Amino acid sequence: MKNILIKTTILLLVLIAGVSCDKGFDELNVDPTKSSELDLQYKFPKAILYASGQRYESWRGNLIYCSTMIQHLANTQGYWSGDKYFYNAAYSSAYWDSQYPQTIKSIEDMKFQLESEELTASPEYAMVRILRVFAYSRITDLYGDVPYSEAGKAFIEGQTRPIYDKQEDIYADMLKELEEATTALSSGTSSLGTADIIYNGDLSKWKKWGNSLMLRLALRMVKVDPAAAQEWAGKAISGGVMESNDDIAFITHETGGNGIIRNGNGEVFTADRSARISKTFLDMLEDRDDPRIRVYAALPPDNGVVDDNPANQKGLPNGLDATSIQSYSGGDDLSTYSEPNSKFLMSEGAPMFWQTYAEVEFMLAEAAVRWGLAGGATAAETHYEDEVTAAMKYLAMYDPGAAISDAEISDYLDANPYDAGNALEQINTQYYLAIFLNEYEAYANWRRTGIPALTPVNYDGNATGGTIPRRLVYPTNEAVLNAENYNAVISDQGPDLLTTRMWWDTE
Image 1 (cartoon, helix red, strand yellow):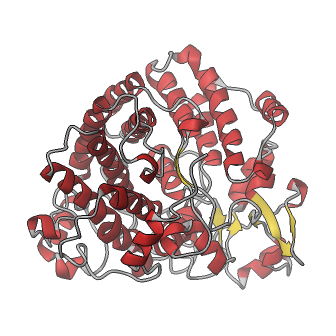
Image 2 (cartoon, helix red, strand yellow; image 1 turned 90 degrees about the vertical axis):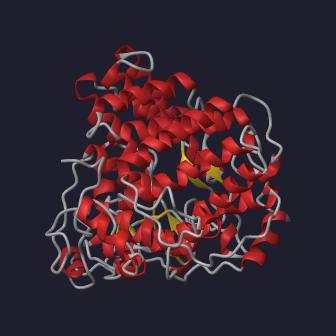
């Protein structure tokens, strides 16, 4: 387990930064002034914490939109826009509004500093490049064509109105960056040491994460460019991806203090307990007699007592409101429906998982089935069993009480054996079941695969005609502050709507 987060370094940075969790931002490159030339020891952990997400974007982007569109969570409140496919301009742009002026600006600043100091051969430069790819990949996967080549450079280059790069070009450059960065890394320890709050400076783990990100991006392209997807998947696997739960890319968070050190999802659950486990999700778990039900779901506490008995859990259908739920439930209120288990998942000190070993095994299984990679088709069953095992084992990282036993895992695999005739659907269904609360990735992988087959809702007044949204909409102020480039991207990518598909999400 990692060192406890930032008792000195990060807390100092938080006080300096004066971060506000719940405020929007008026333009892409906020405060285009020169950042102080702090040592990378201070800048690096701060950038990681920004990338992990705070309450503002976690509430609106990860949970209100992605989690409900993907039917992991459901909500009767009208402001949970994704549940009913409403367009809320501020919520749709929240991830953009927080990540560009914080995460992207911080990462571009570090990259520029290392280049200025002629340290591009250093392992720290490779680490910054990998972190940079992670940050941009989330943004482009949510919005499509986005500022990339000119983003975050208001002071560095005086560029306050960046162009929108095509997603196809962004992906090509991100893959190149990962290939070069991982090639530059080997074993040993970075000089950043514990300031690297992901891997404590372990360069071999950064290399494996970089290749695992490469595999994620490669598979994202299977619909639009299967040949390139196969090529990059092969490179990622040959380079060496995650091998165990010890390699997981995650951030340890803490309760208390300024929002930058707290888990963004946990901050949301502290402020808003209206979300419930979706009936779609819970039914899939129950149909498979999945032991994760008691970790994922619990009835709201009654006099402080949390009931997480799997037999008592009840999922809420998506698309209901405060009135229609009465007809559906026969008068039962929300207290009879399961929420994320507060004993394990709701804490502001919970870890934030960016990419797990289980996800990597899912992708290896798919690569084996599609292309004969990762040991070939005969190895797909082993990858499937390893992915299920890892997906259940890693839950103990939330809390020891969330541990799934070896016997439970064995029983689950006996009841849900690998099915070669239905491999891709089975693998990606397990992906969906394993990635709860990393809703950005759940939403992206569903758009890539269409698995599981979700039944859309068609609530009155929705913005999509009753279809699950394919992207989030750009900030409204881009049409004014960056009009020329905004108009160009609309002309190229298509209307700035929830229903417009991005490059890799072709029909």
